[in-house]
Amino acid sequence: MEQRELGSSGVRVTRFALGCAPLGGLYEPVGEANARATVDEAWRLGVRTFDTAPHYGAGVSELRLGAALRGRPREELVLSTKVGRVLEEPGTEPAASMFAEDSGLERRFDFSADGVRRSLEDSLTRLGLDRADVVHVHDPDDHLDEAIASALPALAALRDEGVIGAVGAGMNAVAPLLRIVREADVDCILLAGRHTLLDQTAAAELLPLCLERGVSVIAAGVLNSGVLADPRDGATFDYEPASAAVLERARHIGSVCERHGVALPVAATAFPLRHPAVACVLVGARSAAEVQADIGGVTRAIPEALWADLEVVAA
Image 1 (cartoon, helix red, strand yellow):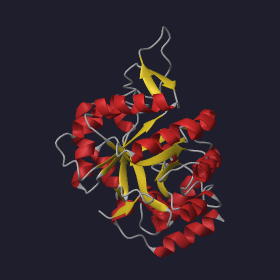
Image 2 (cartoon, rainbow, N blue to C red):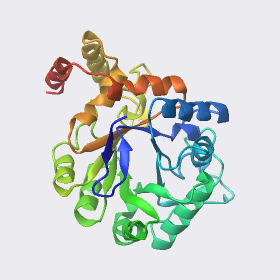
Image 3 (cartoon, rainbow, N blue to C red):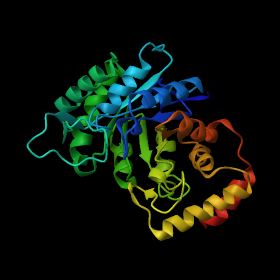
Image 4 (cartoon, one colour):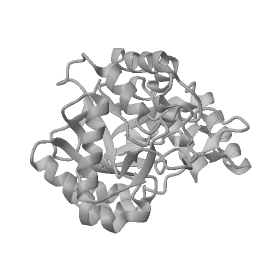
């Protein structure tokens, strides 16, 4: 599969990366065997970039991904994880979780330099690896000053020491990512849900800035948490039930795709890759069948006429 470098880091990612939040039981159980089969199928299809985080199942995703990757050629794979949450024994009232197979450990935000090092060390233990290729600060929305002053410099120092390969920031909001790209030493950003067929708010300022600064974009959330996979009643948009207006628009986009013989999820996966700032798309999957369905946006040719028709819809 084609690869692209993240900034000038030397880390090269496959154009399709497997998002492993579902392997932590996002919304519903996955199970050990299904998690392994998902990673196995991605590898068989040429995927060599895998993204996880302590947040996903409070460590469950990292444990499952590490087990599934064990024995693979380390020089072939790119492993991405995140910092900003440390996992601890729960208090008397464990917090509610969107992960059905949550470990029960308590997540505590910590964007200090010590917190970054502790989080990464714990992640590597769960993964069974001696290094991570990409590390992102994760969801620093309410801790942005500390992330820029402490967490990101700590990651840059680890990169300079050769402990990690590339530094990034993963968020689903454009404004704080603009500030991070302007003020911090990052090789890439993980942009969730803001450059999709439904939401293109990153296109006006963030993507051009990244292109100008040589910061690569990893486009995540390209299915907007489910509605662009299947805009059925009850589908989710940004992890909440989609509104009637969003469902109607997603179905209209789906009908345009259908006229061109392209499945909606395939078009949704292919769309972000059209921008030169985007190095890869990151798509979550909970089964081998989902990997097969999603990867078409990278592996098949999409008619240019479809994009022209979708531009009319967007207008």
